[in-house]
Amino acid sequence: MIRKILILALALGFVSCIKQEPNGANARLSYFDVKGYFNKEINRLQQTNPTVQKTVSVNGTAENRKLKIPDWQKELAVFTNADINKASWQGEFKITASNQLTIYSSANKKIPVKKILLTHQHNKLAKIVIIVESKNILFQSTDTLTYAPDRFYEIKKFQKIRFLKQKYYHITGKIN
Image (tube, rainbow, N blue to C red; front, side, top):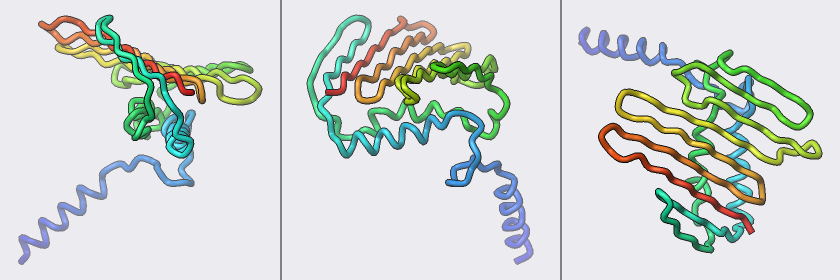
């Protein structure tokens, strides 16, 4: 019995030490809310259900189709995953802003999101460019993600795995 209580107390102690990421409506965000922005876009695109002219290219071999995207959450997941408002990343991004451009950049090697560029036109977000880099002894990857509301989204990916040929992926979706 005492052993069970001790195990329970230790488990509760470990759980209480886990750092929680802010996700509530009242959570104060230090940087642009990438995740929130794309969740709103995903909901809007699910409702409007636009036709997309989608081109997928791997190492220069391309395939082109006109289609309806059944799951925008899955389609734009790479964008929502580029959230920079993680508690452990607070203070790691330099912010440069002008009337039409805001840039968030980080030189921290442990943070994969290196840069976010927000272009504004007429006080409205016109385009987002996100650069994500991952590198270790066996793997190197660079993603350039571009999204222009109601116009297009683009995912460019360079991937090099040690002892294998490098790959280039290019996905473009023109929203009609």
